Length: 452
Image 1 (cartoon, rainbow, N blue to C red):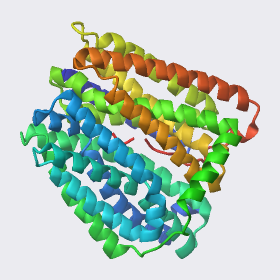
Image 2 (cartoon, helix red, strand yellow):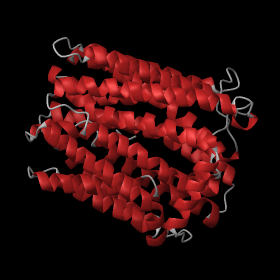
Image 3 (cartoon, helix red, strand yellow):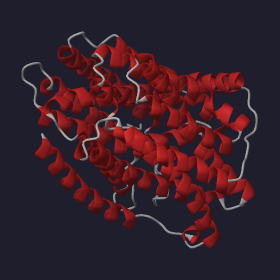
């Protein structure tokens, strides 16, 4: 498994670089790329945001391994993960209102502090302390995915008065570097945890300086801004009305809830499936991120002027690929007949599918859900998404983890069949809708995946 992981990583990285060069040929350039004031503003944003992303990704490869290292049972680890997911959904519901009230800059600084404390809790062997750490991690994740982007959009439009059409250029570049940072974070985590022999807690300690720099640079270089105060109840009620009145929104939400809950369960399961065969977890994680980056590049190539595939087709393909991968896993994790190489390949296919899925889903969501209702609708999407993931880990996981793991993949396969049915239903509803088709030229904003 050691050699397989390194060879796979090298091959994926080479293919990734080749695909990225091909994808870049389809990208348009404009005055935003040469405007010195805009480039300086982008740099101020990136130096803070990329440090935050690096700190987040560093914690991905060894989280499950750390709890195993502390000799917790599979069921106990599942409960810690559930606390993290529950925290993420609860804080996610109020994060937009909290960030608007507190201020985007202060929220980013708060993120650096809460995530640093979350990392420090990993030094403790106490179960309760680790649960509290995961709850803080849920809060931090909610802030990461709301405060930074909100700060940028406000500064871009309100303070600097740059054209709104330039915003996708910033987020598209951020999506690319997010993938690069994730790949590098896996290698870095592997270096400290395994090559230096510092153990699974090391990547969490390495994250802390990145988080401190995030807070310091935000405090030093960013101006404060606030959003308009909105009643959470009104936002949610309007979102529910939109969800129930438009069948397209309901189907899209069903697909998202099923697909992404399966991905959350995958995040929980990949380490216990592969770790008994002694792979370098950081390199495995980087391989996953390279596969995801390949998917993003393939999406841009497929939707370019040359091939002109539609996001709806790519969404269908990504769901089908995840179903096929889960079907493989039901055989490769069969107790007594485990095949780690086949499981690793299936996991890579899932990550490749994620790279295709997230920009396709992002495009369709922007077109289907009215901008004023997006926050409220997304709040309603989060509830079934996290409930399915939590129930999957709490109820479906057998006391015998080997049998339970296979059963969970079987259940996930059934969930993806349901997602496929929802995709087919959505396709029949929107197939003649020109609004949901890509324009003749590539210019959309690329959205990125889940922290693992």
